[in-house]
Image 1 (spheres, rainbow, N blue to C red):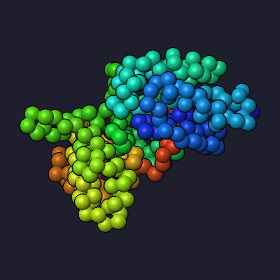
Image 2 (image 1 turned 135 degrees about the horizontal axis):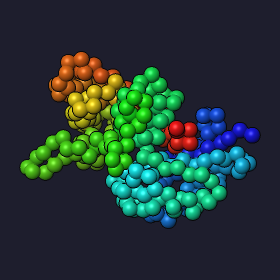
Image 3 (image 1 turned 135 degrees about the vertical axis):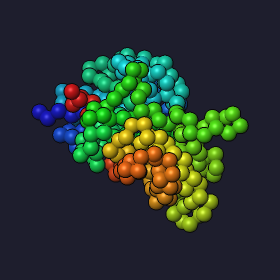
Image 4 (image 1 turned 90 degrees about the vertical axis):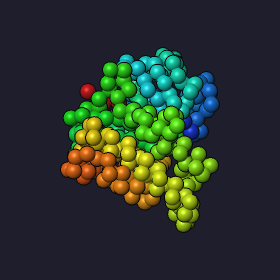
Length: 289
């Protein structure tokens, strides 16, 4: 009997879920993220029941959860979720185990799950020292050293989105505020996907805003390169769809702010794994050593 694993990727706006067998997705589903904790727990249970119709429960060897937020070192409690506020301080491992009583469960920061997927089936297979960013409602980060994800003292290593890259009139602006959906919303009052679509149609204002976002993001990437000296930085998430409009700004900032000339050639790679990568990565938590 082949083993199956279920993976959930819980983001600020949507929940992606997959069934994986032999490291291949055999089923998938997407739903809107509820606006309260009980609604979320009930939604996860409902998705699970739909996903496993016709599957022998004994085949399911684990349920992994990719979560948008910073977990404690034991991966039991949500310390802080910038974009799903009701998760703050919640003992999620306990709550989820109560909901899925008959199954092993594991929790992980969503960007770590994206990185696991990229390392297993994506473009990161040949790299050992990687920084990984997801660009969407916010910016999540993960750091891999010698092929292993580095968690840090409190489980929050890699959170580059909360670093300060600009100060105006004593007000601090984080990378997340200047290179994620928040920036586009503030400038255009639309989301990243619509901005990208307008830019593709030739809208110069959208193109200019995305170029500015790219320059801001490039400053953050330059800081990563100067501090961590990775082989490659991977970019994923909705904003990465606009690669065509942000990569020039990224390149300009790297050329301007990366200190070491050879490091200016650090590879910046846009992920091709798609929207279910986080959920797929959550199933790989059971194969980690």
